[in-house]
Structure formats: C-alpha cells, structure tokens
Length: 470
Image 1: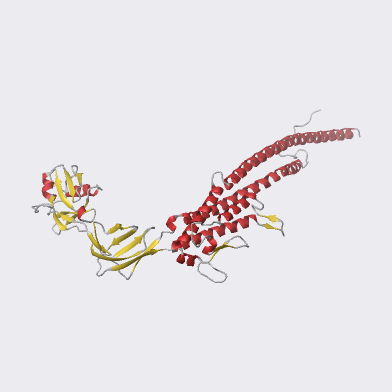
Image 2 (image 1 turned 90 degrees about the horizontal axis):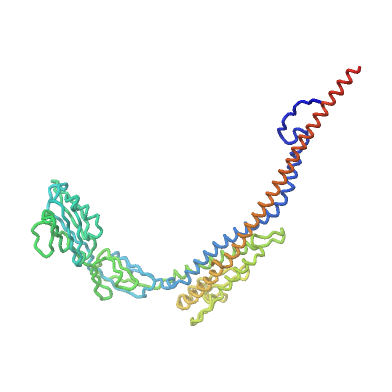
C-alpha cells in the first residue's frame, strides 16, 4: 500500500490537531511551582541584606558622631574675638589655645626686598656666553642657577623663575624707549630673606646684574625696596618677625598682619563651647535616626499580620540592646556631674530615642547642656568623652570584621548562594523534564498525524471500491 509523503510538522500539535503545546505549557507552569518557595526565600534574604545595608549606614553615621565626642579636640576649641573694627590683622586659634586677653600693636609690616638692574638695550640678545648665577641671601644660604643655555635677559629671568630654590623671583620691565630692566624680588619677606650678593661666572652677566649689598653700587643691580621685618607688640612684649604671619609667638594662636595700628587693639581668646553643643546635637540626631530605623525595620502590623524586613530578627535586637547599654556611662572622675542625664540628655521611654535639653531649667528639667557647660565644662567633657568611647566600643563590636553585623550578613550571603544553587538545580530538572515530555509529544503528534493520514487513505480506497461494485 502506497501513501503520499507526510507534510512536516511546523509546530507542536499541528500534525495531530491536539493542543499539545497548551498541555506542555500547563505542565511546565505546574512544575515551576516548585521554584516559588525558593524564590520567596531569596526575596526574603535579599530584603534582609538590603535592610542590614541601610542599618549599617546609619550605624556608621552614629560612629562618626561618637568619635567626635571621644576626640579631645572637641573640648579644646577656642575662638578669638577682635574688639572694635580694626582690620590691621586677623587672629585664628586652634584647639588648646589658652583663654586670655591680648593688647596688640602693629608698628611695622614685613616686606620683601626688590632689586633692579641698569638698562639693557635688547632683552633678546645674549649677555656674554654661558655661565651661571649664584644668589646669596642674608641668612647665609646660597643657590646657583644655570643660565648657560640662554643668556639673554629673557632666558635669565626664565631660568630664575623656573628654580624654586633661587630665593628670588624675576620680572622684566620695559620703558618707553624700549630699554629693559631685570627686577628681582625676594621670595620671602623679612631682612633674612634679602639678597646680599649676586655673582656670575659670566663676566658680562656679572657686569649687568651683579650685586653686593656691602659695597657701593658701580653698575649691575641696585636696591629699590629694602626688606623689613614685622614689628609687633603683644602685651608689652616686642616681637620681630620676618613674616607677616605670626604662628609661633602665642601657643595655638596665629596672627596674620595686613596693616599698621594707630593704637593697641584688644583680642579676647575664649573657650568655644559651640563645638561641644554641635557634637552633642549630631550625636543625638544620629542616635535617634538609627533608633527610628530599627523600629521601622522590626515593626509588626497585627491588623494585616504583616511583619517588616527584620521583624523578630535576633541580630537587630542585639544591636539595639548594645547601643542602648552604651548610653549608660558613669564618669567616675567627675566631681558633680556623673551621667548624660546630668547634661540634659534623657531617653524617651516610648520609643527609645534621646531628648536633648539645651537651655530649659525648671521642675521637669533639672539639667540643661548649656547650663552644665557654663558651670562645669570639665565634667561635661569627661562625661561626653566617656559616652563617645563607650558608644565607639559598642559600634566596633557591631561593625568589626567579626562583629554582629558582619557575621549576620556573611551568613545571609552564604544562604543566598545556597538558595541560588537550589534554584538552578530545580530549574535544570524542570527544563530536562519538559524537554523529555516535549520529545514524547513530538512523537505522539507525528504518530497521530500518520494514523490520520492512513485513515484518510483507507477511507478513499473503500469509497472507490464501493463505487466500482455499483
């Protein structure tokens, strides 16, 4: 029995007219339900890791605030105030400056020396051949500058300015007739930075710009502006300085001169408690932000029966407990103030956040930070230092390489890898099962198509035989 060739099956079920693809898709969807529990666990772990990342950032912010409380510089801050509107100088202090009053008079500013050469007709023409220039300063230092590659006035100025150790800077001035002059200015102010001698191995250069402060000028450079030292009187003490910046005469105080005074100017150096207040405010803000975050990440809504990312998480509870315990410091070295409550810092019993009382003193507020700072700044510093140290130690136990947070996130990361392995394994099994079923469906489709074709052929043959018998 001969049959015609079967047409190729272009899609699953096309040969048999059965919805084999729909059945296969349904089977695949059913199989993939085995992945849902794994995906749910992956989502939970990812959410927890993200929550821990957010929590870590908040703890790091608190750590910065705690470090500021533990830093002695926070309590050694000072400020300088100039009485009146004098603009002859500015005053800056660094931590550790002694509170005091100073009467300051500026009688002379430090200036830099200036020298000028005689007229040189052509600034682009070589002055002799080769050689070097040696500049000697009043402090005894000397420096030699190589000008052998270019002995024009332009070349000499360029070589001087290219050498940071030359002790002088160079400029070229040109008059109305086109003649040029070399001007040298001491790199620093003060008499010790003045030039005492300029010599050259090139006789033509020596003649043009040579200089000897101890001799009568016979050519070469002449002094245009003499170097001077600053002269300042501070509380009756005469100070002479080669610089207009006085940073070694009063410990941790820098005076920068800009003009002369007509009368003594009063400067008050005092303790600056604003830095302490700011540090405490930053600490309270950082602690409260962290406490609010912990509450949000661990809250549970009984109405919807929904928890948050870290609801019931023991690590988060341990972190909150550790930080809360760090607040309970007792400064044994202090005289009258002992705890942070004595500074106006109290814990809100409703949500665990901190309340800071800056100024109010009444029946409900027995202590305020500013009042304690005014009456006993040393005790305040000791208590806050103890608080910063205590909190820093607690945070190190959380953020350290073997700390609570690192251990927990490492465990979750490992769980994440395990879940991914499980997901990949189940997914591969499902893909293999579906591929196997599909192969069987393809065979079924072809078989049914063949049967349909045979049935059609036989029907045709029977019909033909029936027609012949009539």
